[in-house]
Length: 148
Ligand code: CA2
Image (cartoon, rainbow, N blue to C red):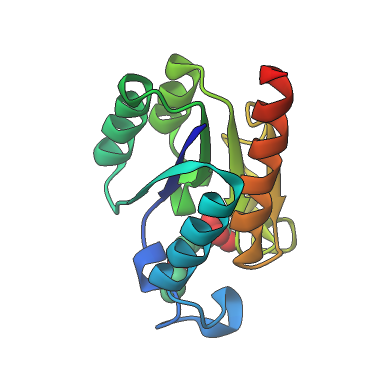
């Protein structure tokens, strides 16, 4: 089972700014925890972060050729704006789980527009960095049960 973990713009700043909203873990901490959990679950994890919409789209296209069967994505601010990343996910037709560190539902009105939730296998929001681990476990269940 191969899973791609994608983090979008500004998430490279985790643990260094806005700690009251996004916590103290750095992106490297989160990626290391995810890699360890993936290994325990027997998942081959491909890790990627970019601040650029086109690079995220290219990586989603690459997921197809790499044989990725599930995606965990926190699109960051693009959650609320990017038709293009949404289209890329639809184009590759790989099931994905959307993760948000903060509870988007309790935040500003402009964050209530979401271009991913309706096409995601599921969304995890507001549970902090553990959301990424829960998403991996959920994909493991969902993809594993498909294979049985
Ligand atoms: O809660 C989330 O995970 C978000 O996807 C984070 C995005 C935000 O635009 C979404 O509405 C919800 C923002 C990512 C910014 O990350 C930072 C991390 C540390 C310091 C500053 C920004």
